[in-house]
Image (cartoon, rainbow, N blue to C red; front, side):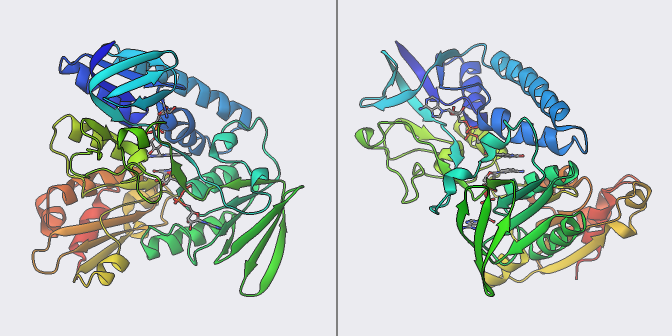
Length: 420
Ligand code: FAD
Ligand code: NAD
């Protein structure tokens, strides 16, 4: 069977693209080996955010809520794909822009690979005893003590969820500070808030081994120690998933195994074959995969203003570079902060912890970055992203634009006004 376009993988990248191509009138197929919605809907964003919002509700109740919400959203994805031929099975690339799924071979004018990523593991003794994020989301009960290896996004969100449920959590992180890509002020303050919530952190440590019975050997400057626990979760990053047949079809991979693409077009090294989302390694976020789909649909997308959110309690979020990376690039900047403790709505909400920090260019006064730690950081980053994407300056947000009172959005205006 021949299609105009064939998409492999029905995660946020693949289904956004397939629905868009079909809406343009192209004869489009999508191949999925598991459930529509991909990692994000079935094993990632949506289940974990449902758990983040479940507070101290019993685990079984929270997991039932996860199943209800993901069932509903899978229905929405299927509806969005109503004009697309949905092919169940695992796709392998064949030469001459053909794809094999089981016994069937399909050909297409263009092939789009959106096969996502999977949890990575450490090459240490006993690594197989640890569970990953997929297995975490299948737990039927929670143990009393949990060790999490990796204080990245997944490690911290899981730590926050488990702490809400009364579990004793210890997070082991290789770097000196948690959440390496975040602004250092944000990471340090978040660590101290989470510590007060009872989460223990061992930073600057190397995990050497996991023993049966869940004893974790780790090493720091003081020597080798053992942490006794009831369950170990590995959250040390993700590896690309690529379809079989890349080598035979001249689809080049990067040294880390991602599909190599031109970041402005998502074109691979093979003519007529494109790759988007986690599998190309440009940015492993659901909204980045969707944005890349929009690029492939010919839309104008500002990929420089890519927001990130970590859904801990409190949450943190950012858009644009950190102070550290601007300094490393020798780029001058001015900065301004606003504290939640000085905002009426934050005090009224009993959420006085945190801050908004704005970094701006000293000459043009253009907003370069915004870093937020505190309640509703996930919502506040929307306006900040708009400001960065449209090249707004600090005076626009501090004065020209009116922010409703009393709201947390005033924090952004105050931080812009405080830039020196
Ligand atoms: P995926 O969503 O991984 O989808 C790929 C699909 O391809 C899968 O359904 C897979 O079954 C299918 N597939 C793979 N190989 C084949 C093949 N050969 N044939 C057929 N089908 C195939 N991102 C956020 O932005 N916000 C969050 O809050 C967030 N939370 C997360 C929490 C967790 C625990 C995890 C693990 C990830 C989270 N992410 C989050 C990241 C987000 O899930 C991914 O960035 C996003 O799902 C990537 O979309 P994608 O379309 O590239 O791939
Ligand atoms: P990550 O890259 O965010 O964090 C991995 C952490 O593990 C890092 O802090 C790293 O220093 C640490 N680490 C690596 N090796 C280690 C070792 N040997 N010992 C101890 N620590 C070690 O990866 P992740 O948390 O697994 O998340 C994977 C991806 O999923 C991320 O790229 C993220 O973009 C995406 N995700 C996003 C969200 C969100 O947007 N809210 C939520 C979850 C996941």
